[in-house]
Amino acid sequence: METIAKAHLWLLNLFKAGSGLIIFAVFVVIVADVGLTILAGWGLPVIPWDRTHGLVEYGLLWFTMLAAPWLVRIKGHVFVDALTQLLPPRIKLATAKFAYLVAIVGCLAFVYFSVQLWYEAFVFQELDDRGAYFPLWTLYLPMPFGFSLMAIEFFRFLIGLDDMYGSRLDVREGV
Image (cartoon, rainbow, N blue to C red; front, side, top):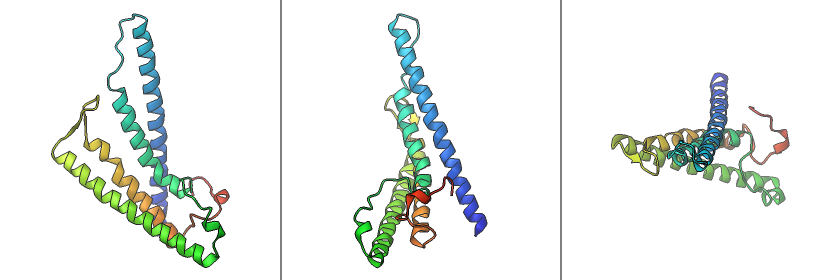
């Protein structure tokens, strides 16, 4: 079990690193595109890229899907716990377990539908034509992985390995 936990943590950190690389690449693409646009405006013979918007959109989706499981692990995702802080411990535990179940079911539903979307786009070789002709399946590819890993993280909360409503001050990176 310890080997599985280490492999899972390694995968979360790999996704986190990939997410960082993607967001840096998006930054570089935007700066280069703006620079080319400025140079073209000065009359220089350069042509701004027509695929920047598509690359940035894909990058933002990939960045989000790869970083989300790690954010759940470190309790960096957005959730409101003001009401639960006022509840007695037993009711607080019951509402937390209910919230974990809802999150797990929601993540698994997204896994199911994103796999269907990916499969359909892959089989029918659909293209995304919003400025750049990318295979549409590349848009859906990170979704099943991200939502599956988020479901696992919420399952960890459900079985008591961690507590989403615990102190966020005690969170250490990569734990």
